[in-house]
Length: 78
Image (cartoon, rainbow, N blue to C red; front, side, top):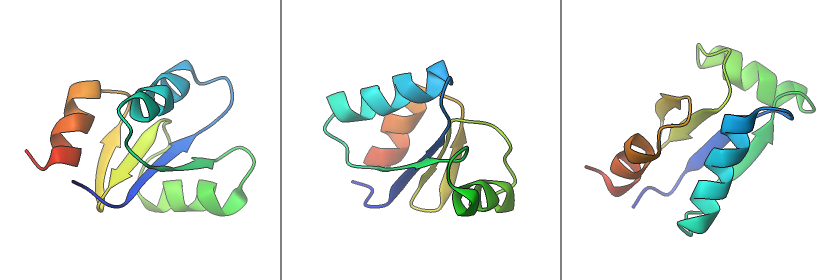
């Protein structure tokens, strides 16, 4: 299982909230970073080469957008 999961999100982003709820339902721990309220998080997101939310970093690998199966595959190491 992946150990380091960060979800970059913002208010009003329905896919962001669906993704975080999905991860909670799967009992997968993650760190949520609100790019609208946290300037450092917004800078981190830009440095990753993404301007979209949700952007999820799983052990250093990016997933842009909410894709449940892709998230599970990456978390389980498939």
